Amino acid sequence: MKILVCMSVVPDTTTKITFTDNNTKFNTAGVQFIINPYDELSLTKALEITEKLGGSVTVATVGLAYTDAVIRKALAIGANDAIRINANPIDGQFVAEQLAAIAQQGGYEMVLTGRESIDYNGGQVCGLLGALLNWPSVNVCTKMDVVDGKAHFERDIDGGRETIEAVLPVVASAQKDLCEPRIPNMKGIMAARTKPLTVVEPIAVDGFGQYNAFENPIAKQAVKLFDAQNAAQLIDALKNEAKVI
Amino acid sequence: MTGIYAENSEGIFKKSVLEAASYASQISTDGVTAICIGSPKDGEADKLAKYGVTKLKIVEGLTAFDAQNYSQAIAANLNGIKTLIMANTYEGKSLAPRVSVLMKASLATNVVALPDTSNGFVVKRGVFSGKGFAHVQLSRDHKIVAITPNSIELKEKLVSISIEKTSFTETVKLTTITASNKAVGKIPLTEAEIVVSAGRGMKGPENWGMVEELAGLLGAATACSKPVSDMEWRPHSEHVGQTGITIKPNLYIAIGISGAIQHLAGVSSSKVIVVINKDPEAPFFKAADYGIVGDAFEILPQLIAAAKAAQN
Ligand SMILES: Cc1cc2nc3c(=O)[nH]c(=O)nc-3n(C[C@H](O)[C@H](O)[C@H](O)COP(=O)(O)OP(=O)(O)OC[C@H]3O[C@@H](n4cnc5c(N)ncnc54)[C@H](O)[C@@H]3O)c2cc1C
Ligand SMILES: Nc1ncnc2c1ncn2[C@@H]1O[C@H](COP(=O)(O)O)[C@@H](O)[C@H]1O
View 1 (cartoon, rainbow over the protein chains, first blue to last red):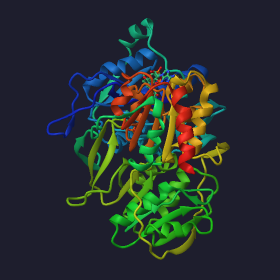
View 2: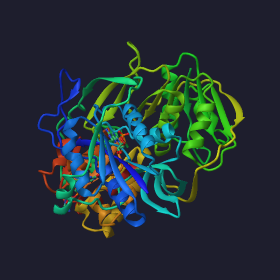
View 3: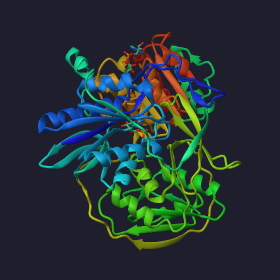
View 4: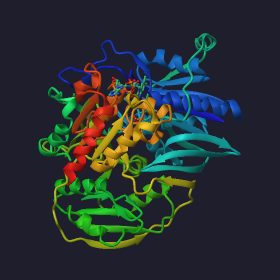
């Protein structure tokens, strides 16, 4: 099994999000970058599958040079090699075109993504890759396995879960519960130093759109507190003041 | 031409579809076509007509859900639709990207407001897990806008609706659904207008009776924090937050939840937030509109009694 894990490099989950240049750019000053939490899951799952069936796991990231340190972490966790497409990854559609080109060249049987990247939150790349490659795509998977050349998934659907099989090659996206993410050990960290990280330039793609500006959510007014002995007042306020019940 | 994808659940159009209809009819000058796969129940078309859908196109011939075939069926029935509005449900998320490739469209997901069309077509979408919004210019001629449930206010616009049936021949199906488990009769968390949620402060699964009782009285869905689902006090499907489900109800009541940043990432867009916590320093109070500092085990019975009284 050759598996491609699409990995986005995102701000740590505790980052305070601010914008610069007149609110046209995300302010990366002082920001810690991490592997997108869902991509940690798909990476771990890819390793589990190749440990069972043999094969290799390649990590692909669309990102600028600052993502290299995080990509090395994925190699330390156990990926065999990595490809970085040297471009700013802000637009999910642009990212998917880049990843599709890599997937096509590499002869992968499975391409894994996360449910969404926690920065630009598109939740788009899995389906985009499926359509660009003309493969089946199965999103928000809580279980993944390959048995006798077929992929088996459990996934979230609106109001429940379903189990679904797909023929290979297939694109699938990871949802929480898929597995316990692995963390790098010393041996892995040492090995990662010499694993190949290839940097390639992006392919040309017709534009889809443009981020004009960003904003933070409007700050909340101070909380209105009610007395614990008189909690019924809260129900009254929700009914007559906020009018939400 | 503007269209919507009218996703249906056993023949019923959910509120998120009506929101898509309302969005589409507010930006369209020449009617709205809804594409529906499978047969809607009697009276369902009227629900769409109430929000401005002038034509319902029913596509027959598809069996179980398959993202590839469904997206092809939608793309084959666009007939001039340039802007397609969808709901950002799990089904919407599995289809919108695929249809966008077939349509060569610009795609925006997590959209929370009507577009600004004063200079092109600019949508506002949620980014950074609720910690930011982006204004994105969609530059292609064709566009897909997937809207976050509960973000668009329903605006009635009653029109007359025509119904057309057409069929689609499935191509080879590369996926097969082998089992499906949907909670029937329960309000799906992502669509609930009121959510009652509880955390580790509830001490143990045996204490959720009160949480469920309050939720029942308010017509709410129940949710929980991550540790609560990790410890299997509650099902994983109830876990909200950065790594769980993102919700945007009108009212979110958080009981015994500290309000960690990762929890807030999934709930902070709720319109009204109520926090009940015995620790006045709990970070959640900073994100709350209303709060009570106190012991949940004393406060919940009072709220239940007051909610009962309010019903009568
Ligand atoms: C990468 C990452 C992703 C994460 N994703 C998520 C996520 O998606 N969702 C999520 O929820 N968390 C997530 N977390 C975990 C998060 O950081 C917190 O640990 C978690 O939200 C805490 O849950 P809690 O508030 O239920 O428990 P606690 O932090 O233990 O808080 C319990 C609260 O209950 C109060 N309390 C105790 N007893 C009572 C009582 N009798 N009456 C009233 N109040 C009482 C306490 O004062 C306290 O504030 C994530 C963490 C990481 C690192
Ligand atoms: N810049 C990127 N490089 C590689 N993979 C990415 C990138 N951005 C997103 N992805 C993949 O696509 C998934 C969903 O991302 P998104 O569609 O941006 O929410 C992520 O979990 C990754 O697997």
